[in-house]
Amino acid sequence: MENKLLLTKIQRDFFFLSEILIGQLVVVAYSIADVIIIGRTNPDLLGGLALGNAIYVPIIMTATAFYSAATIKAAKIGAETGVDSLRDIAYYGFASAIVVGTLVFCALKYFATIHHWSNQSPYLVLAAQGYLDTLALSALPSNLFRVIAALANSIRATGYITALQAIGLIIKVALSLVLIDSSYFRFGLSGCGLSTAITFYVIFVGSLLLFLFNRNFFKFHFDLFLLSRKRLQLVALCKTGVPVALSTFAEFATFGYMTILIGRFGVQQLGAHQVVSNLNVVAETVSSSLAVWISVKISNALVLEGRSMAVRKARSAILIAVAIGFLLTALQMFFGTSLFRLYADDQGILVISGKILPFESLLIFANCVLSGAAATLRARGINAFPALMQVIGLWIGVAILGDGFAMQRLQLGDIDLAAGPGVWCGVFLGLLLSALMVTPIAIGDGNAIRRYIQWIRGSLAG
Image: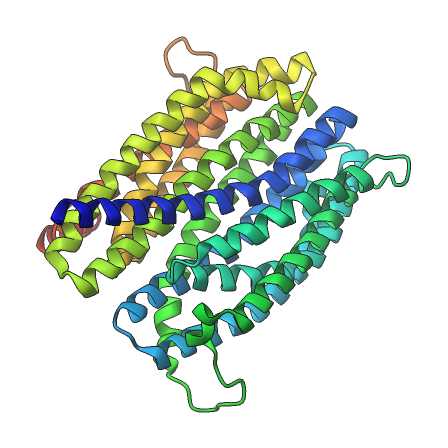
């Protein structure tokens, strides 16, 4: 009987993780579709897509990371059956989405001008600006959709969201084929942004209907005009969400800065960077989905099974993260070169992509381990420390090591690290440093965590 219960629990966890992962991969497929279509029809615009994503991805992923706090808090409150608090979480989640969505819209409109600093041709700059202008239209619906997705994850109703995202992918690909370069329209990169915006409006409407009429979500329904709310829930959301959002911004801003650095070395280097980044985003999606699953699992364990069992589950979760990271690294090393050919035919781009591949693959392993360790700490209420370590590691990696390798001021034996490969190598080493700092804390109990943090503080003070 005990074995049967354990098997049922493992199956539930596996299906929950699978639903999160598939849904996230479907969303990543939105951008992959654009890269493939652009790479096949007008590969010169791959550089413009990279420039546009250097602005768009850090902004939108930072917003998405903030909403992960709603998943963590709602999972804990749901385990305690605090329905009133769940309504407050939902209310503040939607309110945050409206504010953040408006800010994202303004940022995308304003920061289109940043491409004047990229030292690229006016043709690429204009294309990237058109891409950002149309993407700005997706800011509000995409943020509102992500709040509903975060609430769904907290109650393990992810399958509904995954289905909506799959429908969105069909709409996205169909619109991109028509809008980017067809006999009807030739909008180029603006077509990419427009198809994304229309898709997010459709799946947001679908998710809103789900929220309003599916009984699983009734516990989140709130009175819009109720004035007295538990503002402590807003504080709790911010205490969890802001550090996660800042660390995510640091991570994806690093990739934006990488794009600007690599852009110095020409269009082919920039195109190769975009191709490799697309593969990296797929693996990054796996690690972020794993982090959501770990956060929910550890949050529930803290409430239902006690701190000691939560610590044991945290250690098991980190081992799973290490195994998945190793698997992803091996798969990319073996099949990455073949996958690159799906994105582009240009031999120069493919050769440079192959040189970057080993460092990108190792980066995935370090990121998977770090994401798993950080997720266990966030579920236990330790938010600032993993975020700070990630920020420090990433920026040491890109601004010091990556720039030094790329410009050949620094050397790593006889390895040729000029241009793009050097930047990727630097980021891998920086993220590896972060993983080595955070993981020992995550596998310890409460006392070990406190001692380790005190040791780090003493070292920094000394």
